[in-house]
Structures are given as structure tokens and as C-alpha cells.
Image (tube, rainbow, N blue to C red; front, side, top):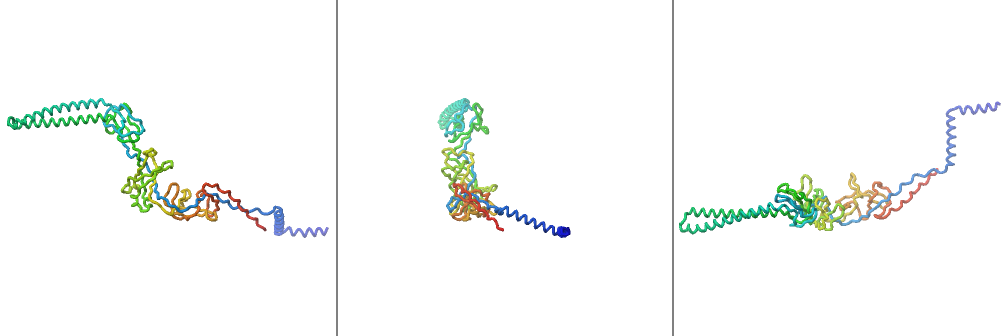
Length: 405
């Protein structure tokens, strides 16, 4: 019994101290963790590196490209004529089909003829009466001419006869003019096409009363071949052209791009260039003429005019989608020799179709990345492939070896 009491009393003081208890607990916990670690095995691997992003690259080479200035343009007929009534009357008949091609001189409308036939007959009757009076006064003047020479009549009588003959001749001239006017009015009842082209919508229906003046419009005709295209070049575009504004007079050829993206086979030629810059818009108005035998371009249609302003050497063509605009200027992303992303500032010229003309910043053989730009960061790995090729399968990322303790 004394031995147990002594042992118990020896243990009790040790556990009763708080610091001694904490130290003992920490030692026991460390041993427990170490034992569990030995049973759990090795530590987990570190996080794998991100896979290379598949991208399409375009290997660029210097080329020679035309210097093209593009502008939005609108087509208009070479001649756009308003067909109007020149006499008043009832519109009896249409003689054409709306929207169809017509020839110069073709009959389009027929206005009632009867009133003008009557007016012509009356004018001819007055002319015949005036001619009869003229013949009578002329004979009388001739007869008195011999009498006045013999002093058989007074000079006043002779002068009166001559005056009557002059009045008769003037009356005949007036009657002849009235007949000519009546003939013209009768002819105007047949409204013909002044030029060849495509007819528009008929404004007046058959049976309507047409009149001269502001309400005389009957239809329109637009000449489509050749066709004109009107556009304006900005002052900024003109300054970018070699030679600047002074080179405008040397512009000759123009390409025409239609709304569907196709280009007319034949180039046009500039037939008008304004002599001054529009101060309100800062643009120079121009006009070009194109062959349009098949009628592909219609008046009022919006197209794109591409003015050929010259040629450039040692430039690069890069898709517009490959160029990013930053606060420091335009930049393209390259795939370098290590297949990592390398930003490259470039200097841009003008557009050529769907490409930028790059005038500085690139070197022959550079591989320009054209897609997946939003996924790229400088220095990030990429898996490049040529346009039209399927991207290669990304390689499995290398695992990081566990650390040894």
C-alpha cells in the first residue's frame, strides 16, 4: 500500500501542471499525425500546366498590292428622265408595260386627239383665209404701183395699199404659226420615250385628266447602260494616298463591289471629280461610269467603290480579324519559334477587301495568329496549324514530381 501511494503521488504532481499537460498533448498529437501520414502514402501531385491553345497561323511574305481607297457609293442612271404631258386632255391608253425596257421614240401614252384635230382644222382655215387676203392685197398693190408712177393716184393711196398688203402678209405668217402650233399639240397627244432605258411606274391611270405644269408627270425612264456611281472620298483618305490631294486628278480606274460581295468584271473610269472639298463634310465628291449591259446595277442601289490610287511594294496582307486595336495602336499576335504568343505592334495602311495592308512591323516568315485571340496571353503556349488544316491534338501536360520529405 505505501508503494502504490508513493507512485500515485509521484504521477499526480506532473499532470497537475498546465504547461506540462499541453506539452504532453502536443507530443502525442505529433506522433499520431506522423503515424497516419505513413499509412496514407505519398503527397498529391502539383497542379498541371495549362494545355496549348490550338490556333490558325498565316505565314506572311512581302507582296505588291494595289493602293485602294474604298468608299460607300450610290448608283444612278446615266440619264434619269421625267416623262411629262405637254398638252392637257384625257389619258386614253397606256402603250407600254411598267418597269420594262423602252426604246427612244417608243409610244408610251395616248392622250385624246379629237380636240386637237379640231384646233388644227380651225388653224388651217384661218391660214387659208389670210392667204386669200394676202393675194388680193398683193394684186391691188401691184396695180396701184403703175398708177402712182403715172401720177394717176395720190401717193397716200399707194402707201395705204402697200400697208394693207404688209398686214396681210403678217396675218399669213401668224396663221402659219398657229397651224404649226396646232400640229405640235396634236403630236404631243402621243407621248413617246425621249431616251432608251427602263421605264418606271405610271403615275396616271387610263381615263385620268392630265394637264401641263406641276402635275404633268406621267412616268420616268432611267438609262442603265452605262450606269453612273456617285461617291465621296474623305480628306483623311486623300492625305494617305502618295501625292496627297494633288494625285486625285490621276485617279482613273474604279472597281465596283456589289452588296453580295461580288465585283463587276469590268472596271469603271472616273468621269467627274469636284474642284473643292465640301467644307461641311470634309469630303471630295467623285463619279465613275461602268458598263452595265446586263443591268446588274440599278439606280439607287448602294455599292462600294474601290478607287485604284496606285501600287505599294513590300507590304503584307493580314486578315482584319487578326488585328487588335489597343490604346497603344494596332497589334497582331505571332506564334514565335517556341510556339508561344508574341504581341507585335504594326503599322497599317488601307483596307484591301477583307485584309489590312500592313506597311510596317512584320518580317518575312512571321506567323500571324488569325483566330482564338480572346484566349491568348503574351507568352502562353499555342499549337499552331496552317489555314484549312485540322488542329493537332493538344499534348498531355507533364506531371510535376512529388516532393520528398
